[in-house]
Length: 207
Image (cartoon, rainbow, N blue to C red; front, side):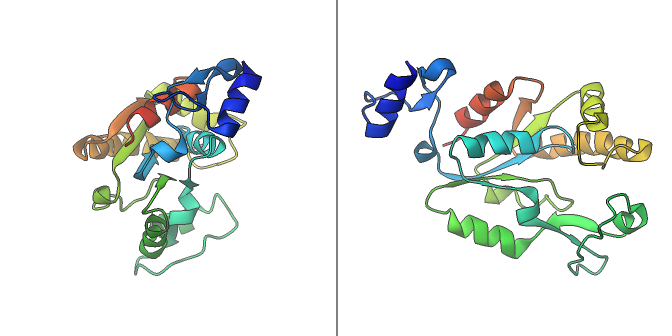
């Protein structure tokens, strides 16, 4: 089946009505492909929930993806861009700066993909007011215990959330972010599912 599926993909010989997504063993599935998706989509959720994992899988499947650092930046109390110091755990510095959407970068990315699609993986302090930029907003959700377990995992390189007060900030912030996504008419996705199920759910809610 893998050989057959690969040949069909290579020469565009799929029967009308079938998508070119490949499931286990290369079996043809009805999953959307990059040419089926149009518009901008936001993949969001609290720190540690798995946004980057979802974005990487979408990218592996051939979809256009932009990551958090490509559309956001730190600013100081005056709104001026402030490069983050190397010390990841510099709590004093973090308390005086905000991670926000970079309007010019976001506008450039949206313009670049206006005739196709883009999935943007991001969370920012100033998300309110940006709903209109996206056809759909996907919120990855875990319960408090599962989220804490992922954040505290030794394998997680990002140190944010490993301090007790930061973990509480993440969990409280997740509840507010979920309410914002619901108010914006976005999609709530169970992030405890296998990655292929999450991707399937995301793509099913695209246009």
